[in-house]
Image (cartoon, rainbow, N blue to C red; front, top):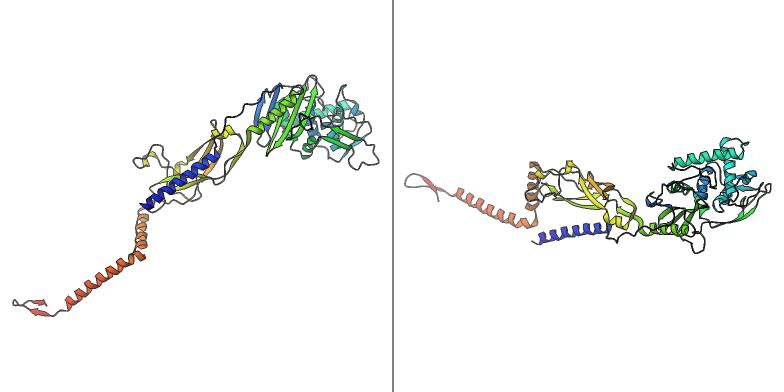
Length: 474
């Protein structure tokens, strides 16, 4: 009775451990927060690591991007230049439309490509964009005699081609700076796709995180042979600056403004291992900052990387149909592989897990013993240790999010007549030669000895003839 009680307690403890693990994986959480209400006409929020869209508002509607165009300008030109290469500016910097934002370059000035990018992305200089497009197109075509108009057309063709390669299929840019043109458009989703690629380039990522650039355009050691100029450029991105709109986690990317586009912003931020990019179109100041901060906070406060399964997680124990005599009646099953992804608290609470066993190992209902509840899972031998016997299927809202192999922790051999004989023989051997059995062997030996002695004595008695002439022993 004590052994049976101990066995039951052990099984209960094991199942309680499994139940506790399930609670740890799928904790009870509060209801999800509602997405923010934003002023911008269109918007999108994305987590960079997974590419998961966390918020959308008319994200495929065509919009004017203004200076957010420069994200693609920098990314396109980066394929053709090294950061420390020198570019000497010419009259192409005068090709900017009236009313343009400027970095205040001058004709004849020499800058590094890296600092020309800073003029483009930090100060948002339209003439920086003209210079980049002009000199990059000449390098692309190996034609130093291109006019500015020809160079701008060639460069914009390359920009549009590159956008499509990122999946930004509803983008058409006609200039490298974003000054208004009715044929110059994109969408929130397309700017997001371009921004995701932009932030993969370490130097570009570094530049758009800088609040200020102060120094010589040609670098820390400007060559004497060139005319160079000192600059002080402050970012237009208020989320980076120490003011009322400062957002500590922010690290980029690009603002934009024209009368037709109003204010727009592609913003990036990183916190606790989660990196977000938000895009907001047509949101007047200060709403553009409020919208962007609200989106980023919504992402950080409601989504995080959650490990749904660890490699080797215990999935439970399953009964074995007609196990070998003396063998375990249950087999432990664990899962192989891990799954970690971005989920909200509400989603984690809604994830379900189902263990689906392969038919080769699954006992049919007809095989099950009488009295077993319908739907019970019983496995059948043989099963090799470490073999895949099924699949753990995780679902969320009816969609499969992850599948993991179910692995056997032990060998399970099929029961046979030979295995039964071997079991009883081993039982006999185990019981017959123990110290507890020794007294029975001694007692049996004594009894056998007495019987043998008596038989011998009887056999040795002399024979005598009786009155009938027969012999008998006395």
